[in-house]
Image (cartoon, rainbow, N blue to C red; front, side):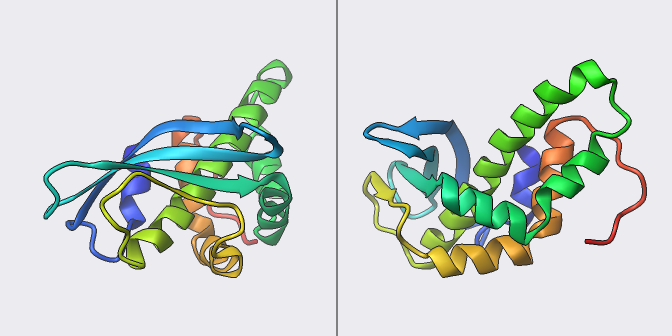
Length: 157
């Protein structure tokens, strides 16, 4: 996930973060997904796992906020018709990952403790929304990079 390292936590050298798994459904919550990240702070002897949860409703709202569907349609417009559905599905997964990464950055800024933890879907809803809006270019660049898309000149929102 090298593209995501571009805009990480406020002190990138303080944390080393990698995506472990996700998005995946949250057991017992059919409309909630999560990503699990491995987080290692320089001063810690070992790393931790942080699960970041978001609801489908939050994902839908955030997607609408940054007009992700329109961006994705433009980004995939040069692909053959038979390739688009798989790229669209993967782009949705990558969007959830990027949203979770934005939420994780908020946790890192709040000085998370050295213990495995879950940041539930009801924490930092407004802050995540602001972060995703502010990081629209980061999110779309990350997705384009992961999908190996060659984008035309930057498009206006």
